[in-house]
Image (cartoon, rainbow, N blue to C red; front, side, top):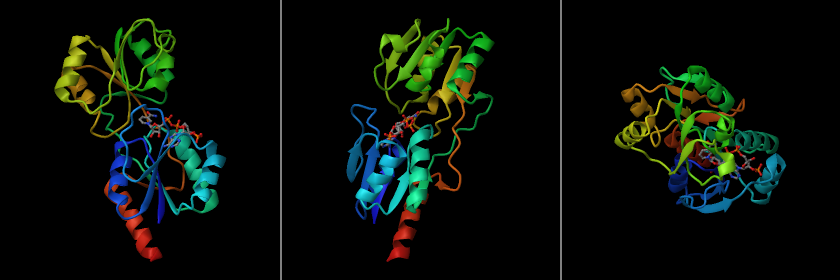
Length: 245
Ligand code: NAP
């Protein structure tokens, strides 16, 4: 069986690790990060050229099944993969880790709404952890920002008053608590990414009584099988393999 894993998440790497000894596995990465953790099996890097390009790639490479294990906020590639697999009749599974419980967070749908919530509540020291694509919404805000992203950003992409932290999880409760104390953070802005690698910030915020503005996930495509664990995705592949044998 030739399997394409759409990657960019810890779950995608773990799935590749488990499947590569038994199947012909290729992981596709968008190429956003300079030194990505390299998954087991074959790896290709860069966009496909939209849904049409993805369809061509799937046909050219005789792919038998696609597992979309991208980050929960990677909505475009997820839509493209669903459409391409549907049109070609290729079995397709979405692996999405469960969301975090929102708890007392102010839940919003977009980065622009997150900015509005921050302004409406009058917060002046903001910990922005919602990813580089959301920072533009905060560009002309008067608040001060602690901004944490993986890759460097240029000054014109950032609000005027900020401190930029370049790092990649996992993070610990102790370190997150210390960070929020050190920078006198008043509000945490996060996507609802889910997973344990970056969840310590929520515990730290709760312990310090810091409110959270949480950007909700984009909707999943309709009529696509979805699982939430690597175990379930592995089982899906094994069942298809057994059925075909
Ligand atoms: P996106 O908005 O859904 O995708 C934008 C374009 O990037 C897609 O149309 C596709 O280009 C290309 N692309 C995305 N994922 C790809 C993949 N796995 N392999 C090949 N091409 C891919 O995605 P994004 O939010 O920019 O995220 C990009 C990647 O970073 C994803 O793979 C995701 O798993 C990872 N990531 C995202 C976030 C986040 O918060 N969004 C966080 C951590 C990791 P073409 O149309 O040319 O095919």
